[in-house]
Image (tube, rainbow, N blue to C red; front, side):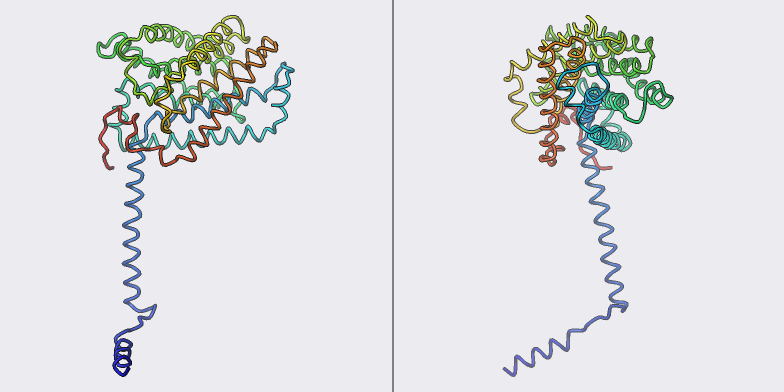
Length: 391
């Protein structure tokens, strides 16, 4: 017992309490703060580096889908001569719902654009590798298409205004510049002939021209709209024939990217809407393009085995389903307003419901699987065979 008391007393005598204001305490605090400042910036830098090296233009599929949904709902709540029950129910929604959707799409697109700008600044070699890849180069159209879709659906910017005109030029010129580069490669460079690089994602370049034509027609620039429409449609016909003939380039896609086959009916759907904007009516030409997209959609729906392997695990490539369905639903809305028949309205209701359900489902899946958005074994990033480097 005595030994225990003596040992406790010795421990107390050896333990010294350091005052808070003493030099020892201040030096300890300084050391901890310097350690934290050294750890956290390095972690943030490492996290940003990991994100930028795994990020690519294919992620703009998300903004394409949201931009298409914003344009779809702006059309549905806008003025119309259609007296159907569905349009009447849609008009009962408060305009704030559409405003929230548009703001959400703007936020996502701004975030993706910021990340890609940082990628261009810190990892320009990776961006160059995307440009030189037969799949990655096509998704370089996606950011500009997304901005054009948001411009058309913007609640604050009206067509035929100076701001609309300036923004249209800012978003449309890069599309034309990419056209000159890519379409020139198709018939001048041996390794990049259309027959060797053609794949379903090549149709994104066509969609870029058609969306630009639609936006130009909405502000009254008919000649510019016809120019972009003809440029897109001529190359679409050549591309469609090439893809139908199944040259080697059309098979150079991994199974995970099979959802991009939905772009087959996205291009004629956008073409029908662009031609309607140019002529001012959903005439016979628009109907023919709409029927073509509807046939291609039906052909893909009845081939679920084509997409079986791509649906085993969530991937950002799933967003490739949403945009084509949204544009097809938008075309069916214009068709139903022109025809005013019960079958047309039933078709519009089915496609509209499918489009909303798919977009909503993908949003929920993405929120629940945020850790899988930037996987280490991303098959899309693997297409470029790029090393992971630090800034």
